[in-house]
Every structure is written in structure tokens, then in C-alpha cells.
Image (tube, helix red, strand yellow):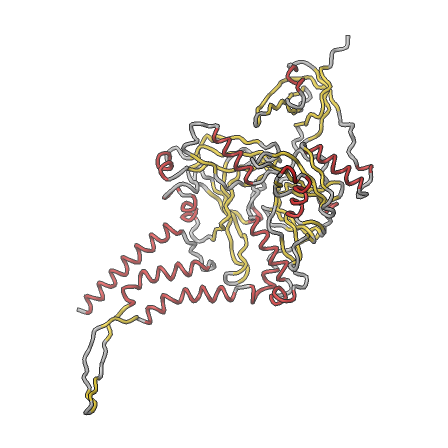
Length: 559
């Protein structure tokens, strides 16, 4: 009888354990990696699913009764159930490992190891950061504005608006040396996925944060593996089955390469402090959501077109380890000597072909002003520190809002630029509807110097004039009004409508594109192919495109 009961328990253990383990892995998708704390919790659940038939065992009790004439003992057995301590201990051991491992690898015992995860190079802002003369190529759009434009663009594609939505997770990228924000479409819900799973997701949205425009890009091969898909088409399930031991970061970026092909960049982590501490990027998976193919890269081997491997949150966290724990854990709690930390948010700067995060650095004892800035490369994880004392980002935003407080405009999170050697915040001011009304520049070291205008170039000119008036730069650094001119013979004319504004591109026989807004130069509507026009222009980030600053009109042939 005992053997029969034991056999039944073994069969029940195997069936329940395999069933639970399979379902748990399929639904929760844990990393099978002992360097991940949650692995040990998952292991405890799996052991429990196999062990629970053996957790309880029968017990016997002996009871004694007494009376006034003396003590008499009546022994009898009661079959009961009690915990099998050996089996229970096996279940609990992984949980104990998880708890002890977390304590051992905490900052309490490893402060300087956490601080040593990154190396920070100090640099001079005025010489290291390229000076900005034009502001027409700076991305100033925040996430909410990008989402608004993306949703508006999708809404114009009538046959898709009921089936798909634009993902809220926009990625800041540098696309063909131009800043862009991109987000893929997602299935609107389970039933929309079920109806369209054979078709897949047809495309993505690309937002131009410089010109405040967006376009929908339809793909020849649709995306099959996305976050909103279900079962085996789910993005994370496809990745986990391909890489069961990798510890994936929550940060997953959607990007496109220089040809516009879509990819997901999935960051993989490993602890820098044994056994679970100081998680940092070690590898990245580049995943093709159209075909399901992927490739694993070490950080130093990631292709240059990839922009976002490290998240901004991780970049800030690692600098905070460096800034607060370099003097030891006790100093980070009590003394705070030389302790510094990042401000509450971060922005983006495009330098060359890379996207960098930037954020202010403050003393831990006061966050009312910055003692400097850090920038961190989103692809390589490199850090630079600029010791520039001045207003922190939100203080600058309030300064810009205060100049036009009667209008009630709200500032977006700023970008950081170098204007005549001066660290400068540049931002947009939006009305209650979210429309950009003004551009503002605020001096970091002298936040009372604020310039606003309805056009970026006008705001830049006014800002430089204020720098001269306040004795910060000399008048020789004011912009020269004598912009270059060209007599262009028009080979072709292209027009586009962006948010109700008509944009003209004159293709010159000299090989350049001359871009201008019809609302600024109404006489452009009369120009035809073959005519020659005299144009004053400024250079843009794209060497082939020139921004029209003035058009003198048609140049008549000399008789």
C-alpha cells in the first residue's frame, strides 16, 4: 500500500511540476540565469510545483488524561498531517539565496565597486562642445508633442486608424545625420491582432522634431513580432525562446537603419558586483521584427547606425553610483563629502552620428542649481563631465515661462547648446493646446538672460544681442547679416504641405536644394522651372539642403 501511495505521489509530482514549469516559463518568460535575482524565486516556485505532494506527511499523537484519584494515561493515535521539513527546506533554499545574495551585493558592502562601474572624463564645455550658430537643426520636441504628431499622422490614414495605434515608446535616433523620433504601429487590441495577425503591422511613424512634422512609413514586409501581439508572435516571447539565459533590460528601443529598415534593439545585462549587484549593459540583440531573425553583439561591436543601447535612466543611475558612492557608503549617508547626483530628468543631444543624453549635476545637499553637466553616449556608454555652474533645467524652464507669464505658455524640457562659448538652454514654449508658440534661449550661468521669439533664428539673434548688452561676449561675435547669396537656375520645384504650411524646394542646377516656406516668401509661387532666382541662404545639417533666408526675385537675363 505504501509503495502504491509513493508511486502515485511521484507521478503527481512529475505531471504537476512539468505542467506548472512549462506554463510559468511560457507566461512569465524568466531568464534562466543564476545572476538574475528573480531566477531564484522562479526556481523556488518550480521546486514547489514538483515537491508539493511530498510537503505534508501523516503524524501520530499520544494524549494523556488525568483525574482526582491519580493520573491515568490513555494512549491513542490520531492520524494527522504535518509539514515535511526536509522538503520545505529544499523549497525555501532558493529564496534564501536570493535574499542573501541581494544583501551581499548591495551598496552597503560594495559602495566603491558600484562607483567604479563607469569612468567620467572631465572636459571644457566651450572647447569640447561644437558651437551652434544656427538653431534650425536642433531637435526640441518632447515626447508628448511627438505622440500628438504621430497620432495625427496615423489618423490621416483612414483604413488603418481603426486597426492600429502608434506605440507610446518613441526612440530618439540620428537618421542620416538628422535627428528623428520613431515609433512602430501596434495592434489596437487582442481582437484586432487576431483579425490582422496574418497581415502583421504595416509600418511605423517617423517624426521630425526640428520641423514639427511627421510621416507614416509603410513597409514592404510588415512587422510580425511586436509588443502588442500574442502567443508566439509576442516580441518578448520570441526573444526569450531564442535567448533563454539572457537578462533583458526593460529598455527596448525601436530603430531604423540608414535605409529605413526597422529593428528592435534589446539590451542585455549582467552584474558588475557579485552576485546580483550593479547591473550594466554587456550585449545587445538586434532583432528584425519582420522576419524574426536576430544577432547578438558585444557592446563594442554594435553597428554605428544603432543609437539607443543604454537607457537614459540607466545612464543617470550609474552616474549617481559614481557621484554618491565614491567616498564610501557611510559618506553617502552621513558626511556627503563631494557627493553629487543628476537632476530629475534628461534630454538628448546629437553629436556627429551619435545620440547623447545630457543632464545637470547637483550637490546632494542642494538641488537648486547645477554644479555641472554630464553627457552620456546612448550607444557606447561613454561619459563626459562639464563643470559649468548655473541654473538647473527646470529652473531655466521657469525662467523662460516667466518672461511671457501673461500668455500662460509652458516650456518643454530643454536641449543644451554652445552659443559663443556660453552653455545655453534652448527650448520651445507651447500653449494649452500643445502648439509651439515661441522659442526660448536661457543662459546657464546667468539665467536672468532670456531671449524669446517666434522663430528660432530670431531667438538666437536676440540672445546674442543680450549677451553683448550684459558684457558676456563682445560685439564682434554678433551674427553677420551678410549671408551668402546664389543665383540659382531652377531645375525642378517640389512642394510639400506640413501642418497646413506649404514648403517649397527649389532644385538648382548647382545640385543643391533650396528650402523655403511659402508663408514667408509668397513670391515663390510665381517661380517656374528654367528661371533664375537670387537667393540668400544659410547652411543646414544636411549639406545638400540650404535654408532660404531671402529671395530677391527673378533675375532677368542681360540683353
